[in-house]
Image 1 (cartoon, rainbow, N blue to C red):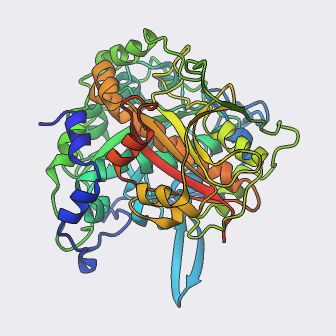
Image 2 (image 1 turned 180 degrees about the horizontal axis):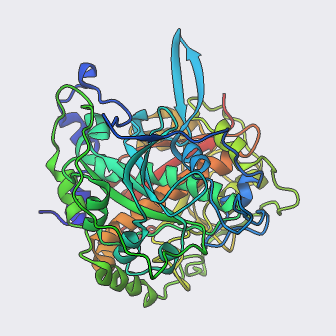
Length: 518
């Protein structure tokens, strides 16, 4: 049984460990990138998806549950109030948004990026009476855009109780549950899949938050919940698949107190095998189990622990002898107006970068909108997150090349050290393309301190926060014409050493590189 600190150390990448690995991918055993239930009834939503026209830059700049001022007021189909479009939410979070023929093959591209394009994260919707959806528990099938019906009846109370009666969950017409099916990612990444579960669900949830907020709905990420009731509700086997986060969307639709909650009986729907010979990596499920919360009271207590943390991570301590660079992001009136739906459809994974400089204002705007704080149940008051941001700047007009810590809120860069493109590529697992980008953004966390203060669940939240920030960096980048970006992996220890002593024992969670595509 491992705690998060041991898990993190055991899955660190280093040049020595990679050289010692003897591992070849078995393409004949590659898992299908989506699950198939054999005989469940299905709901096929009518009509086309209707994403909001709210600019992506406004939609990703929210650090709280309330939607941005630029978003329209939501209205249900019957004119009664908040009624999220569940099909649109799921499509623009995890669905297939474009199909292209490349090299004679039909390629399908999803709404959000995923490590290795293995797409191991599934979305489940637990709903009341919401538009076309009768009360029930549904699984979103990204392959068809349809929904498998796992249960009929209003089970939202199960999630409310599991979250310790968190107000956002208790009042939402729909709560989306993100879960990872381990083997679909472990086929390539093995034990590191537990990290990828939160990175990859984070990019999906960044889209989900943006579309929900862009549509004028209240929404946030709820990381504090009892896991076992959610496992039972969805009919999961944690050795194979487990829940990661809850995202309630909308408000004003609490389960009536007079309503009798349906019994959560066991379900075991038949699924088509993912591949011929799935391989078990017990460390992944073990790390997840060590982070579980027992019940709603434990979830509430874990969440309340953050209320006693008063550190202001948005500004940090100003060193008297530090060099500071003030940034100047554009205001809402002059920012890119590309809508959130169109931005998601445009999003790609940039494979080649030119060495051309990007403008300082675009650079500042991407950071300002993407990294202002994640709307999560645990963050309140001065605590806006568990991760810090470091930028390796190679080609930004008016900013000297070098390593900087970025301080959100103040929109300032603090000089750390010199850097160069060759070193940047080496740190990113020897991928020279990373050094070709204009900027490399590392999201860093002190894993020891996080686990000491907030337990193994805190590690989950730090990884998820970094994953959502990664997803928002994608959206803020692709909202700008002429910019492209992509997430990469890295040598953990070498990055930490490279940023020391300034990073003070922190280790990288995620890496995003952006700039002008070649």
